[in-house]
Image (cartoon, rainbow, N blue to C red; front, top):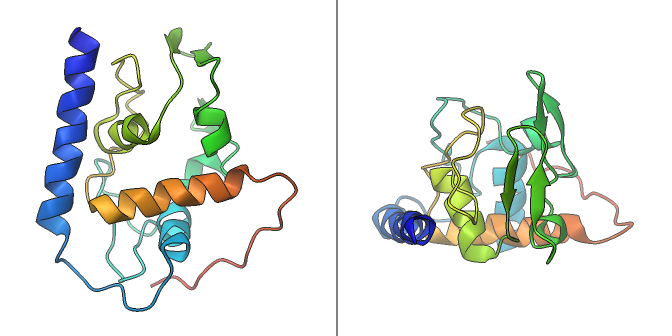
Length: 165
């Protein structure tokens, strides 16, 4: 029950943050997938907003640790997991040798909780090296997750990265 409460609180916080930031900038005529790609690759939105995070990094996104294809790697000697949507939502769930965590599969809401609050679907706290990306609107989070779905498509050619803003 404690884990569900933590996830519920994290999801509520994501919603409130999205409401608070919704008017922060107009995205113009940019597709949601392009916005998600910009966030993933560069930590900036299509509107040019730098996404705030708990590490104070600027100009970097998920790809810095998880790779441009989202399939993971090593960062500071710590494994960065595969964060493609198909991997995260694998019905078998996940067991992490590093840290000994086990949790059920993610869904869209628990992915949001992981990104913003650093909590996995079982309510476990993610490693401190995983930044908490607090500067995303609700729409930005949806766009990012949609881009994680794009990365899940097999044998796809990566689109050219958008220019850094």
